[in-house]
Image (cartoon, rainbow, N blue to C red; front, top):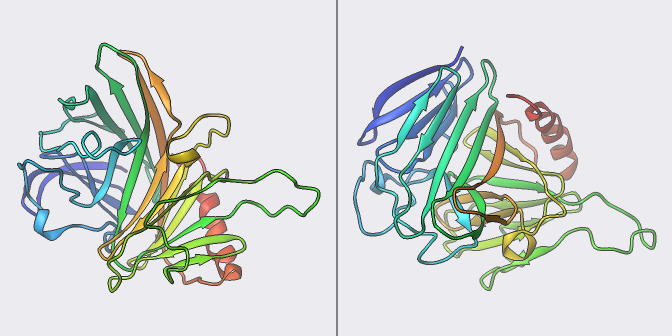
Amino acid sequence: MVTLDTLSYKGWKNCLRLANESVELIVTTDVGPRIISYALLGGRNVFKQYDEMMGATSGNEWMIFGGHRLWHAPEDAVRTYAPDFEPVAYAWDGRVLTLRPPEEADTGIRKEMEIHLAEEGPGLRVVHRLYNHNLWEVELAPWCLSVMDRGARAVAPQEPFGPHPENLLPARPLVLWPFTDMADPRWTWGTRYLQLQQDPDRDSPQKVGFFNSLGWVACFVNDSLFVVKYAVHPKAAHADLGANTELFTNGDMLEVETLGALTRIAPGGNAEHTEHWGLFPAVGGTSEAELDTVLLPRIAEVDDVV
């Protein structure tokens, strides 16, 4: 059974707790919105929270807060970082929680999150929408970012192996930023998996993007395994030189980011991107053989869970 309750949380007076017998989420409505917490019942939140920002409801500059958020890509220093301190309207029909923040004054874009929690088990579906309230067409992509807590280790699949010379065409783009250092020890460039380890002792940022035809990313954090699955659009254009998946880390956190296709949105139209989440007790796994055993059954469980 799914329940929804209102509560005060870390200085915000109007948060929502969505829960079943396996997991709970806490969502902000004073700002954001953010899914600021996602945890197994009795377990630890897998998302990073910035303690100094908790409870803030005003300001002139955007605040990360932590948790899970919705942006629009490509990234822009002005447009992307629009402050989101306005109260968030919400609707609950007994099954689906819909969050509707106000239109962004400087962009004419309105965000929406629709959260479906399974009646039982850890499954969650989050539908992200961007509405164009301008009088002209805009091109953008829904960009969904989960800010994982310190010590997180993200795992993404490499493309399936194909021998040479039978396979002459490339399998995926790998996108690097000017600050990306492929020799940084936080990266593990494996045969079947790419791993990124968050390290609180290393402040320098690292980021890569890639087109992930397998449509999943996993993250070990706080004794839990967080899995995200999403639709893949191989024939569509994507932001950031073709990326539908991005991983970022610094000394505070690690971000798991998925992107929908670049979409030309007519006035009054919208673009949509859906993530399916699963949360499980973590059971080790650093070698590729261990990851096969630990990850693959869990990823299969997330299919059509809601």
